[in-house]
Amino acid sequence: MKAAITTTAKYLPEEVMSNLDLERILDTNDEWIRARTGIRERRILRDTEKPTSFMCTEVAKTLLEKRGISADEIDLIIVATMSPDMVFPATACLVQGNIQAKNAWGFDLSAACSGFLYGLHTGAQFIESGNCKKVMVIGADKMSAILDYTDRSTAILFGDGAAGVILEPASEEGYGVLDVRLYADGANGRNHLLMPAGGSLHPASHETVDNHMHFIKQDGKQVFKAAVMAMADVAEEIMQRNNLTADTIDYLVPHQANQRIIQATADRMGITMEKVMMNIEYYGNTTAATVPICLAELDEQGKLHHGSNLVLASFGAGYTWGAIYIKWQ
Image 1 (cartoon, rainbow, N blue to C red):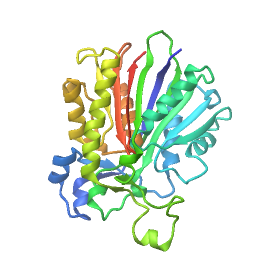
Image 2 (cartoon, rainbow, N blue to C red):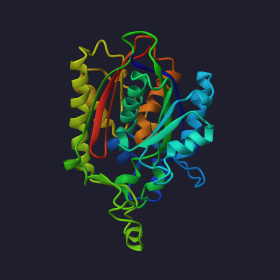
Image 3 (cartoon, one colour):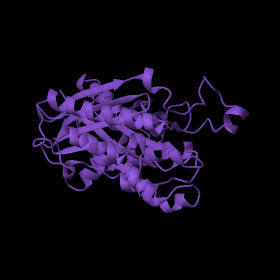
């Protein structure tokens, strides 16, 4: 028994922060940002009373409405995020309470930008084992809450957003989540992309706040170099393992971190950009939400059909990376 995606949904805040807006507060400009990243604008959830769980809840409600089911039918909620409302309780528990999914249990999964792929694979295992019939997997991040808007190396890259799917047993053999390759490399990745404080290593103090240690920090050159190689390698690996070719792949759904990384992955796979789902221009990097937002938009546009071959690929802090092969049912 394989797990298949039966429903998709997304939530994006209404407020748009353009590159021109960032020009007013940072030493940067629209042309420089677009040339190096492909980003023109991003969405920001400025309301401090609306945390990550708010966006997740909006996604969950839409998923239930589109699927035509009640919250009571959900067995498990997995939230992939690096910006939870708080260290504990888990954001998934807050979502479970918000939608009153009284029969569901849930947990958060932390794998940064690869979180949705990690979560999708995890959720699929509960379907395949027979322990769950309906699993909700949501990727969401309120990156504006952990961005230092005096740091132009990170402030230009990220936006807020959420999206998710419902997983259920595939209705036909040979469809659904068919293959997964996930990796991690903490030895090389631990110091290049991180939020230094807020955990047990550096608990909150005047010093950590004064030194901006509760914001995301990134060594851009190191992360870019690692991401280009890892995403391209794992995408090619999933193709070879499943005898996929450029002709048989319908869509590459990559993590939206940088236009050049996406292009390099497509080049390694030998596919044209017409087969690549890309919306980084409008949303920036929403970390764990990028891949499910892409899936939701493909679905909304009517581009996913019975038998469509999709390759999902991502790379994130940790380092974490991976690829998933899905045959749409």
